[in-house]
Amino acid sequence: MKVDVVLGLQWGDEGKGKIVDFLSPKYDVVARFQGGPNAGHSLHFEGKSYVLHSIPSGIFHSDKANIIGNGVVLDPITFRSEIVALLNEYPYIKNNLYISRKTHLILPTHRVLDAASEASKGKTKIGSTLKGIGPTYMDKTGRNGLRVGDTLTKQFKDKYHSLVKKHKRLISNYDFDYDIAEKEKEWFEAVEFMHQFQIVDSEFLINKYISDKKLILAEGAQGTLLDIDFGTYPYVTSSSTVSAGACIGLGIAPNKLGDIYGIFKSYTTRVGSGPFPTELFDEDGTKLQNLGNEIGATTGRARRCGWLDLVALKYTVLINGITKLILTKADVLTGFDTIKLAVAYKINGEETTEFPYDIEQDIEPIYKEFPSWKFDKDIKSYEKMPLEFKNYVRFIEDFVGAPVNIISVGPDRSETIFRS
Ligand code: GDP
Ligand code: IMO
Ligand code: MG
Image 1: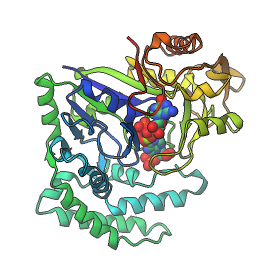
Image 2: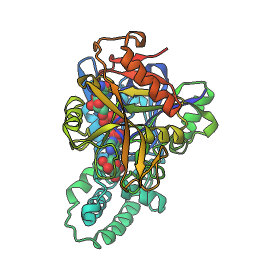
Image 3: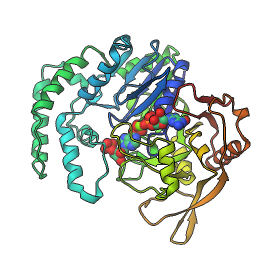
Image 4: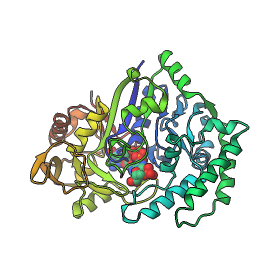
């Protein structure tokens, strides 16, 4: 059996949580492969709303195994508060949630390092969520990190303190005040709390599921334009958000991958700093923000908004080998008469459809206009959707070279349309 992947094709917040939850009934296992509590995945169903940061979005289906993969970075404090908020209503999660022994841990001092580094950058700051992501992945690749498996060994406290000592030396290079005493206490309690969950060699578990012909869905966080290699560097996150990241972040061989679902919104948003060629600073931008309710699920920051960028989308479809596209927030554009799609960039007087290395230079997007559409939110089939919408979908498919398979027309699980 092949492992399918769901990931974001823009700068995050494309609706991954909603879609993974929607697709979960088709699968036996849902596994997060990278990122950490910088993610905020929102789910709405049966009148209830949740935001998940570290827990996979298949958790609301009691018969599914959910795995936090080795590629994830886990903050025990955030993990505990997420679990505590769910445990009463969903007590089964103690039995169906697995954590990889190789998952790296975010320490309180990683958060301090993140904050100190951002403060020192002034205007060039990344706009990090300040969850300690960058410093934790730096310790992982620098071979200094602390993993979930370490917390079960006798050397755990020694390893912790020797890493914190290193961190304190690094922090002293910044002019930054901090006090981690309280947080440290909370962190150790949260590590104890984490031990009631199943800590496993998840690469063996997942490969056993594969050989038992179970269906597996790998859930990405962030989006391809935030990928450490292919995103708008340095305004990116610190992990591999692309489809290949699912192999590394779960221990799955590339030939085991099946469908690669790429999610994109009908427009574009970005939180944090960094270039954004189609960003709107006019009424249309404000309208997208209001109609799309574009407020960050993790930090509460307003998301920057702009038109859909097909130059960027074609690039992210290519990098991931997308087999199926998922279009979200199709309902938001019903508030407009005319909408725009960027179909080329003009750079130094020359037009290109290739996403450039230097995305910070002066880029003028070339737009194609489309009439918007009106549809009933209760619409249940693609066939019944208006012609204007179908023409827009066909144009996108032809441009990026992948078919749109699912369309989301509202935040609720039920507001989703499969295109057969
Ligand atoms: P994720 O990080 O990719 O899981 O996305 P977020 O949850 O951070 O942000 C997506 C936001 O859009 C959430 O508030 C969702 O509830 C909401 N959403 C998802 N799909 C749709 C849709 O089709 N229409 C509308 N209006 N909202 C949606
Ligand atoms: P989900 O999974 C949107 C952005 C931050 C910042 C940059 C680096 O909900 O789509 P980091 O904290 O990783 O050091 O921040 O990446 N960012 C996200 N933007 N959605 C996310 O996750 C994000 N995770 C990180 O705003 O610009
Ligand atoms: Mg999000």
